[in-house]
Amino acid sequence: MDYSRIRKILNPESLADRVVMAAGCGSGNAPALAELAKNGVTRFELWDHDVLEPVNLVRHVLGRASLGRNKAEAMADWIMDRNEDARVTVHPCKIEDSPAFAAGVAAKDAFRLVLCGVDDMNARYRINRLCVEQATPMVAAMVFRRGMGGMVFRYLPGQGGCYNCLTEFARQHGMMIEEAESEPTGATDEQVYGLGLDAFEKNPGLSIDIGFISLIMARMALEALVPDDGRRDFPPLRSNLIAFANRPDPAQGMKKFFQAEHFFLHPQADCVVCGV
Image 1 (cartoon, one colour):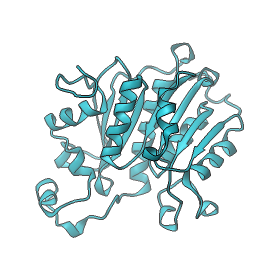
Image 2: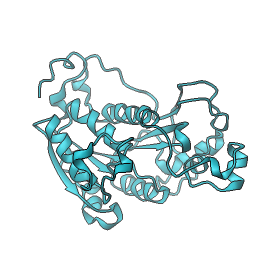
Image 3: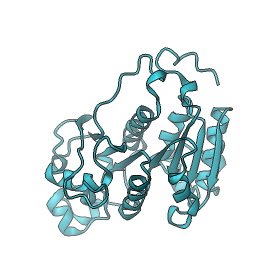
């Protein structure tokens, strides 16, 4: 792949021994994977049990030629078409049904990073625990209902808190992650948004809305993947948590369009996962 247009920013070859493990290849993770493949990452391991359906086309990077195919398999072809140096392993199954995922997180053959794009909170907690136990970096993204915004969190072992710490941190700052993401109840809607239950659908939001969060996810992942000697004009990102509003969202403390808030999440004293 010809990297001449980006070599003054970073050295793509410095990413040759980096492995990105994608938990999910849906509309959030797929654009992030695409960006990483374009910026020098060549080793990928992809997990997804789902197939691409017509309803997915308005929000996914994959096109009509991939309809009916497993998303991980189709995304692998997309990556290898864009970057001829890519090596992609596909696991067309759920994370919890894949011993290979736990083995991959534990593997020490290379610098590994988990790109967590699963919707289920419990699955995120399981992935977080695995990453903490094996000291494996992770980047997780969350898109709020109706595409109002989202959060991107990066876990680096020994450099800040874990995803489990985030839940308590978010509550302290009035950012209601579970309520903002989950399938709504009438009481929750009235409390959080002042809207009725019929105002929501499961996982709504435009591709554009999801795209902002995916790009932040890709940038935070690339930040963790690029070694110091691979940086040229690529200043380090100091925060490990970014909350982004596509439009004003008073429930999340966001008052402006395209507002970003940066935080550094320290380990929480009562975290039962990272043991602080």
